[in-house]
Image (cartoon, rainbow, N blue to C red; front, side, top):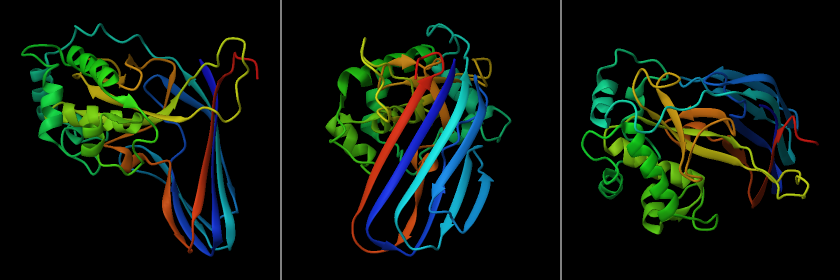
Length: 298
């Protein structure tokens, strides 16, 4: 499947901004069943300085400095991405979760995809006893890591309410867990915390999810959204490098409907846009996302 992606982020400021610096992480990731065919970034106003780099986790980051006074800042990322992933293994197959935990600690690698980087607390995913106990119910002794994680994924989907007003981008994991409500970011953080609490390597994945308009209705421009899910390391012989994607918001194993932008420890590593502005007053943020299969009529 080939997708055309468009992600437009616009900030409007109540007062003039005279200086801003921001980091953009909007280019989809190559590898593990997907390939970036084209990618471009359009920024208004034109920045005075650009610095491109690739971070430790392989995420392309563009840092912009804007010295020109402005009341609006817009970033439009457009890409074409080919996605074709192999079918995942049966959930009951693979190593027992206890063996996966041990293998992750003994694997002689510290590369960016090494499971050891994803077994411990991170900035947005602390280890919380209650969350670990919640996850433990899905991992009986000797059960395969993937089977337990699939059950946990379904439990989160059943027990948590999707509510965009219940949390914000900065809501702590413990609060979202207590509320049993939130958005895909919260569901992913809760699942990661539960898996890591058991010693299993789990990563945060950001990207996009293909959506389908209702039958007979046209696709609405800008109506899609960015998405987040989880990648579990199931052992060195499981799939692409051992990583298998699990989407707790939709209770599904990741296939060709998901497009990966970044994989790292938590949302703090992969925020699409962050930075600072020198100004006073309020700001308004709007985001438009389009995820369009090329075999679908425009």
